[in-house]
View 1 (tube, rainbow, N blue to C red):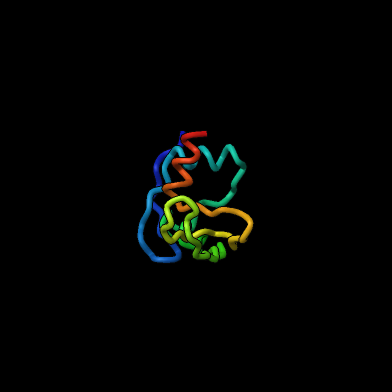
View 2 (cartoon, rainbow, N blue to C red):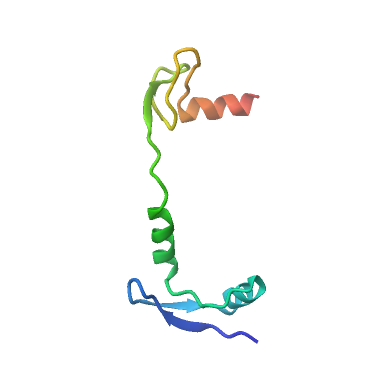
Length: 92
């Protein structure tokens, strides 16, 4: 029923394939319009609207190495680097 279509991205002008599977998905969801941007431009547009996380520097309570964390560390709670945190999760 559906056949692959070659479309042109309105953002970068490159050609991309709107596959039969994607067309079927669009039809199931009731979408009326074909995509106007290639996957790379859609992803870039989606990520541009996301706010960048502010990262904070802390000292790992386990190994003493510097760790970057996406929250403001508090004095009354230990902070762990990614490796030590993963080890603790495995042990639990």
